[in-house]
Image (cartoon, rainbow, N blue to C red):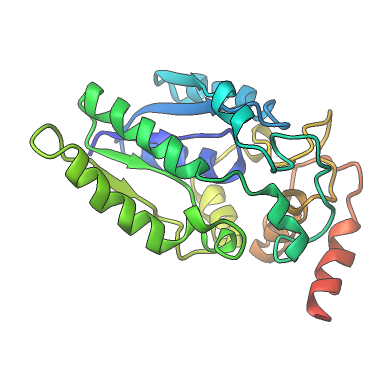
Length: 233
């Protein structure tokens, strides 16, 4: 199937793009600028499109992001340290983010004659982000079937929805994903901070997958304490 991949520039979505490309089914990438604190991730999405030689659509949603207050990713609140499963990580939720992005992605796919939209939501996101859960993705497919009835039939692909971040790293290694050319850190500094939820999850995933992590972290060992703290709760 001709497949559009939603690509943030992060490890998960770049791995997904390489997987789809390896099957010869990648038609294009789509990314979103919603005013996120870590918008430098978009540079890595651009680089991925260049490497895979596919069209790349960057959609400006900064006005929408500004209206979705209350998240540390779009507002003034600090991004917390710690593991993703900590309750404090809920401040990184951007309400309806995936619902908004997928709606646009499906519209683009239908307009361009694509047959599928792929997104890299995964099992590790379920605790914090409701629009990464299977119930959401299944309901979204039903909604789009009705929205595009008689015009297009687009399939939502979520190959990682029941898999872990470590599984994604292993999959990325099998598909020669350039991990160093991906961005995860929510703080968006010069280097990965090593302390926010995405950095801790990234560092832990490489360890669990047994794959060397090429990422430079400002605090490369914080993840050990974060994982230990989680285990004591």
